[in-house]
Image (cartoon, rainbow, N blue to C red):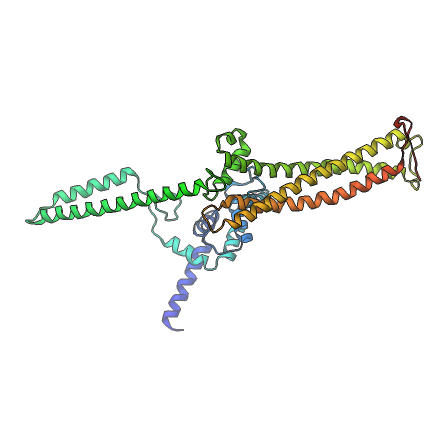
Length: 389
């Protein structure tokens, strides 16, 4: 082989040996720093890959997930929490090894960057040993300025240099004034734009800044009194968002309670089945009062399901309208992006929940019909009997 190629191979081999010799957790720390943990923004990977790297990093550093479960509308935060929580029982050292392996798969050439990071000269102030420089403190800056002044004053000033230095200071001062003026004009322009965005046409007083409204929603969930501090338009939107969440919570509670009642009613029907030979003698299940009570339970279950479906449909129609409104305003400054974003997230939860309620409602309707057929109506409910065929 040519001498140059042989030299490169030798260097590469020695670099690999040096990397292999690094033990954990040092190996993990270096790779995590190069990879930009915990967000890994510089790595071009799919969402699944980034979520896995995030979860493994958090598990390796913090151990078991102790972060409260985020709201169902915070899709990104909920996905990160779910991925981390799924591996909460993993050992920290195992998480470190898997993290390094995952980064190696997602980012090609990671070890070249690790080698470059290791070759950087380390400083005394770098406690991690990875060569990361800390930003200078005010004390350091002051000492540096004093040394610069002393060095300048110790030099002898040649004839004519004083005037040049004065002219230079004047030029520097003029440049600084121009820069300050430019920054002031830019700040004023930003304030004008912000006030224009805040004014709005449809929702006056509601900020159009991305993330502002969703942050307010999180705060309103924790502290209901926060709503009273908002303007009328913002309060209206936040109440609509909270209404969507309340509708989903109510639907989930109805499904859970309905499942328990449905199980009881099916057990009762199984006992009433003429083909069932395991019924105990003198069972109260054949009592007309017991059958009527089961019929009433089925009716209440059906009524609750209908109310739940109606409420969910109202929410679905409202947030579909919100999406259409925000799409129509997307070319103007009146766009309220957080409202549109929430609408998509809400529909992603409302539509599947409505489907589940619809399926349960159909089963409950059949139960109501079957118990209705078993009950024998009469003019006086107290004398009603039952028919079992």
